[in-house]
Image 1 (cartoon, helix red, strand yellow):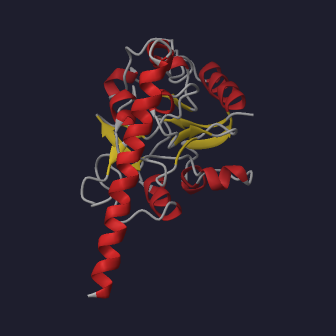
Image 2 (tube, rainbow, N blue to C red):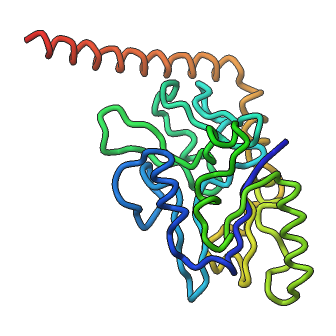
Length: 244
């Protein structure tokens, strides 16, 4: 079973309830920012009276996972792409590799982490919908199995000819995504990338990595060692500071 979200731009009223709910559910500090950051994992933008959500698209074959040398990013059995800050060594390869420019870095912290939507994985594992879907007062965002969401989107397009673009965004983009979108205007006009192609970028990543397995293993181990040493040094410094 692969779950996901369906966002319908024609229903969205830009109330921001989804972004607020995300903040609460994930214990993110500060107010909702205008753009996605390490502390704001979803936003709603208005483009000429049309609204669009920005968040992690949860690729079916995620490039961020393929480039992470320490498995800080993984794809869960249910579908969400999740992040483990304890494993992260701060290389930021995920930021460079993501075709949707999603992962953001905590530049303001001494020991930073990456922030992005994790599709409320704790709730999903319990069989519950995401916080954003629950909070939406007009069902502009709905949660469910991806195959059912595709059927729902297809039926909306069939029942409302001329209302939607003749394409569900996320069906094929970058190999397909867990977040699907409907809109009444061209997706590019809403700021979504329309030149990603149908093949997962991670396929190219694996083709490159497979040719240099020894290098990748040694480089990953070396970077993780640096991360561990740095973290240990900080811990020792804090301990010594308490003894003074």
